[in-house]
Length: 285
Image 1: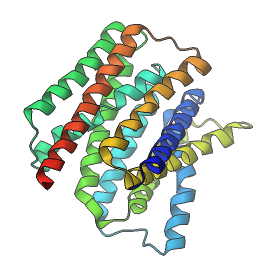
Image 2: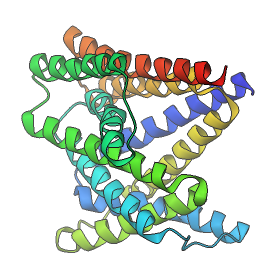
Image 3: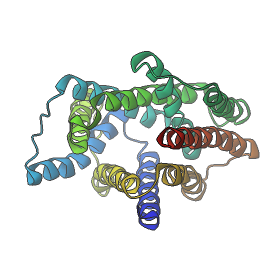
Image 4: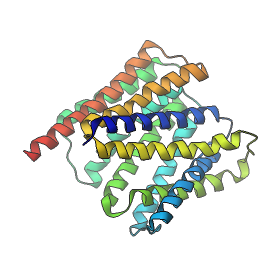
């Protein structure tokens, strides 16, 4: 374990994802389908290159699950990108982070896992944060909230699908399938709604995939180098960074209740991480 190195990589990951989210907001003049297409195209340069250089078979062995992960991931991505057209950046990032709650619910039925009653209290706290954020923050329209919550639902399904795949496939093979399906999905859906990028927009659109790829890479490295209960909470620094970008670059305004709602969401999720790690330590002793 190397905690300092892990913290460094997790903060780099948060910076990379914040950069991607900021670009998404800036490029809102393009359709969500087209943005999904370029997000995937930018990442495929790295995933194909990595798999080819390492001689790793790109097709994998659990192809149905890999395709399923790609499909639900692409839908989640599309819904999230669309939601950014309707709501502040910080609020969107915070609301999407309730995905682990949906993953826990799906795990009950699909993976036959059990959830402790204390964890349900933490989940309720997070959902109350959603209520506070929507009920008080008038900058979040109902359509934006619906889109971001549906994105979180599909993101929860992504977690479950990856859990089903387990360590039987290389992580980059999983990401590569996701990007290929997102590329085909976004590309085909934007044929009749295509807006040809001009000037630096080409670079910015392709940069989405670069930021997304390195965000995932740095997060993986951080979790490999440090303890989950210490490193995972740092991921939520991304919410603070997103708020700063929203205020500084897009002139977004947040009320005190917006921050209360975000704190409730993040607090509930952090308490759940802490509790799960506590249970894990007990089982090891």
